[in-house]
Length: 223
Image (cartoon, rainbow, N blue to C red; front, side):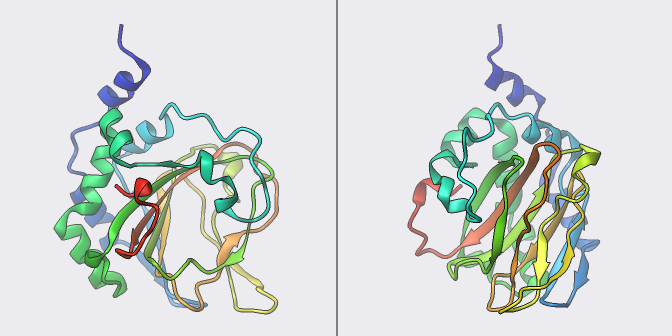
């Protein structure tokens, strides 16, 4: 009898994930205000999106909601070598974002020198009560991409929020939360983003794809 992990592995497709990502980047919608960001659709093969959403990780138990992800570091899940060994879809995603053509295309699109960074992929499951204060990503993050996984129509208002600068941090817009859509931005001095307090009507699943500087300390998080 197959284990749960083996079943998830078997469901992962052999599609050329790098080619799929490249086609997505060709369609990316550039938005220049209040900072440069790009809206994405059809980021990964749908079979892989469903396989990621079906990974056998329970949502965090009794998480602390204080506006910061790092407050729940002990329960965070990454596509590190351990998870790549367990799940083929994790390997597929990592391979796509290590592909030289994808790395070169991301640099041309955004200007970020992602080739010098290490890949970090986090699997997130946010429940009602979760929020993120307006913040800037830390300087050792070179690149940030979010890909949304859930197909629940009740989550349509659960996209990442984009704000203007301090002190008020007015909400400018929110990325559309739909399955296999996403967002790219380059961390900088004005890339204020977060998730304003509001009900989450379902399980808000996503992956966060970062390239991080070689000085990144938490090596177990890296792909």
